[in-house]
Image (cartoon, rainbow, N blue to C red; front, top):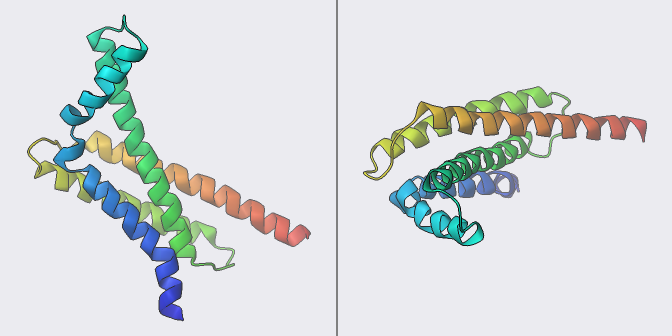
Length: 152
């Protein structure tokens, strides 16, 4: 029973980590994603300049970093919580941020070994920002649920 309990909370974390790892390969390099976003932007905005296409493409990629680590952060909070009603949500959030930041750093190390990718401390900061933002949202939602449980 306890093993199924852990699987329920930790398998989604492992799946998202695997997806992030896959997205750190050459398949999702800037050159490859430009092949999708460039023509799409030119189709939607025919008069768009190449510089603007590059800027929007870079912005979309950075948003991707933020979003994937936000999702990972939410799942980490859920996994560390493990269904507990303990009022120390900050503990789960702190553990989640720590794992998120360490995974972001390891992801950039991984990218340094991929020929079409580059490691960037800026990406670690963006990824970490996504993990931190997720913890803020999770803590606020958790505190709200505790408040509602007390008032019920």
